[in-house]
Image (cartoon, rainbow, N blue to C red; front, side, top):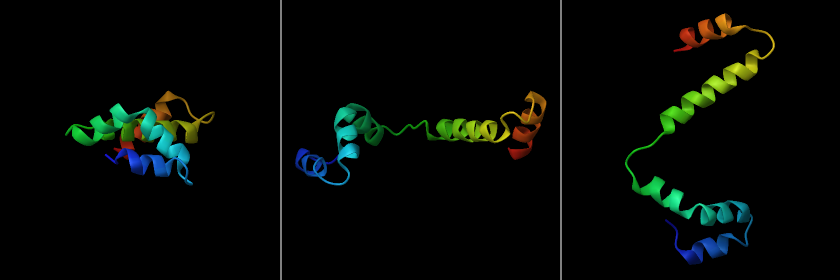
Length: 73
């Protein structure tokens, strides 16, 4: 995890919004770097499903969506 001086410097740079978010969520960021477990696979699958649903919005019923998801996996 970056030290306080680096985050302070970043808060007055072009990435100030990002640095403020790091400081605000410090505990979560530290845990993500420290813990061996991750929910990245789950988040990726959710993102893929949401993308497919957005692509098909208004054009497909649940049967077509289900067939497309089964074919994709």
